[in-house]
Amino acid sequence: MFGLGTTELLVIGVIVFLIFGAKRIPDIGKGIGGAIREFRKVKKDIALEESDEKSGEEKAEDRNDASGMEERLKEKVMGEIPGVGQVMAAKKKIEKVKALIK
Image 1 (tube, rainbow, N blue to C red):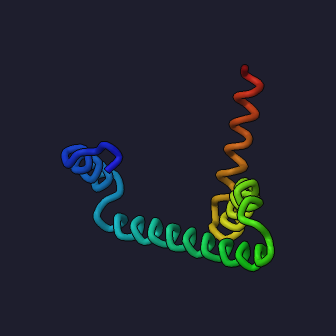
Image 2: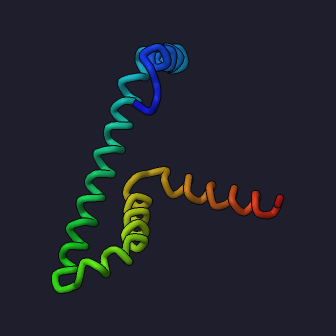
């Protein structure tokens, strides 16, 4: 599992327990589970939209349109999951600053 052994996972678990406490860990788990569920829902919606659009198109065009699907997925996730838009905006600002520094 990502090259992590039992000892590493135990240490990470203890650190998370110490930082957040026993009362916050279930809330964090619910939040992560909800985000994963929402991501899967958005992915499924986009796949359904794409299958409706491609009814008469060839599969070769779909391979070329992979970046378009990624863009639509990104837009849908940014619209439905709170905070993602802010993170993406911050990432763009950081990239601009890095470009200025170089």
